[in-house]
Image (cartoon, rainbow, N blue to C red; front, side, top):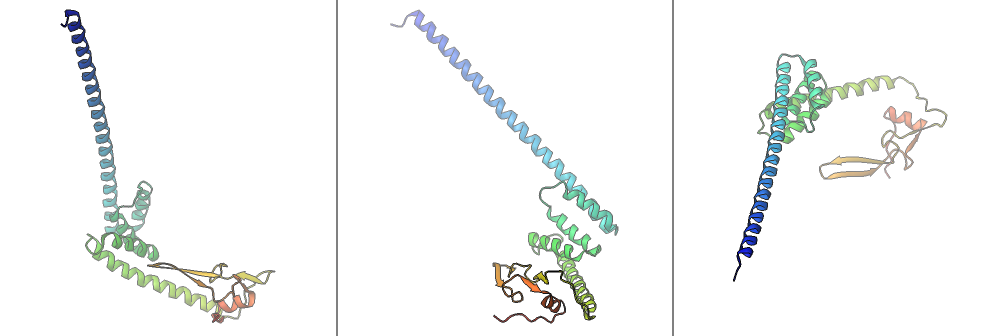
Length: 219
């Protein structure tokens, strides 16, 4: 038979177990609530930061619309200093503003990134594609002008002094003896046809190369 003393002990143990369980559940709920509050605070902080970035991007768009391209460029640089990843809309405005600043290579690069991100369905896709085409035309003109200027300078019968060694690193392969080209399928490697596997050119060959008179090796 169960005595009164044993019943009392059992009752006390059950009370302590219930109290312990209640304290444990309360602590767990408090910890969970605290974690949820921290998550909410972090989410709110991220949302506030995103809203701030969005406002700054809107400001960039307004400056471009007002044709204040230099101020827009300064603001874009400041935004880039505060973000880990560049928002897609900012890639568009960076490319657009670069076009109006006559930074055509930079314009093509950033507009191309926007098109890669958004395809043809983005808010600014059509404008980005049109501006990119214009920037590529201007970039080609720049390259043609540079080439013409170089030809004009080299057309005079000047020789470049290569220094006491009489040799220079091959400018075609940068002295590596290999020309690396990037393609959609990866890098391709081709032996340089100008430096004869040495990575260097004699001064005579170097001057011929500058004037377009050095013929590549067929081997």
